[in-house]
Length: 255
Image 1: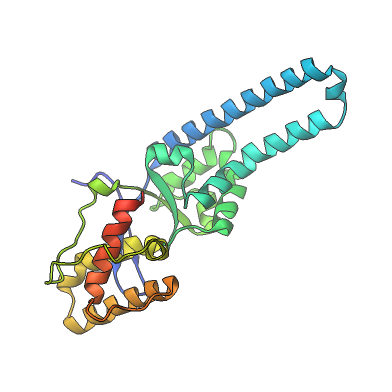
Image 2: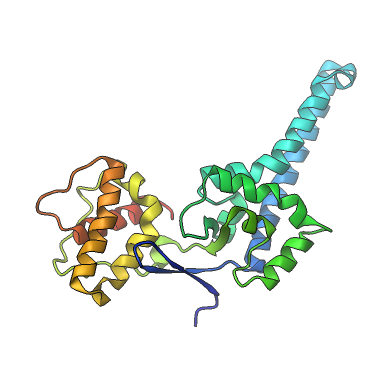
């Protein structure tokens, strides 16, 4: 029995994606790890200030450099830490990686810099009155376990599965000969954000009418090829192409 509540997203390609939602427990594990890292950062700053004080004299602290450095570091750790990591790590912070959860858009797509900044600007409100009290209440009453920042940015937090835990729905095209040998690094980068969509299609294609299946595969594959700037190989079907791309992403990237 699956212990996770699931978010079902109907994509523009009319494929239903089911993603396991992250609950309060896993999100608190993530914030605990991130908080410990932030505390460690503050401790390192204090040690640095003490060292500079001993090296340069106490008058250094009475100038503008020490206070400015301290204020800037506090701002960076509290406000920039989460948004920066969620932007460059596609919805994850170090704590979220430990808890194996990820922030995504409620459409199933990865977050961009604007969503990452938006959801974290509201973190101060979610923290009220203490220990994320407002955020916890909001998550408990919302069926998607969203805090206030998620409502503002249009995001949800879902569980991430390692590649070896994912049931890969490959080999159903009939040919059974698709390989990743012709899939380049550019194709992998272009298709990575569509991996969930690709695998949802591959898992459901046997249940689709032939005409719908061909059109859907062509739409998804065409979008990836256009983004990567490559042409379709003459002897390669769209199904085989999508299988090869999905395999290569799973082999070379942590999703």
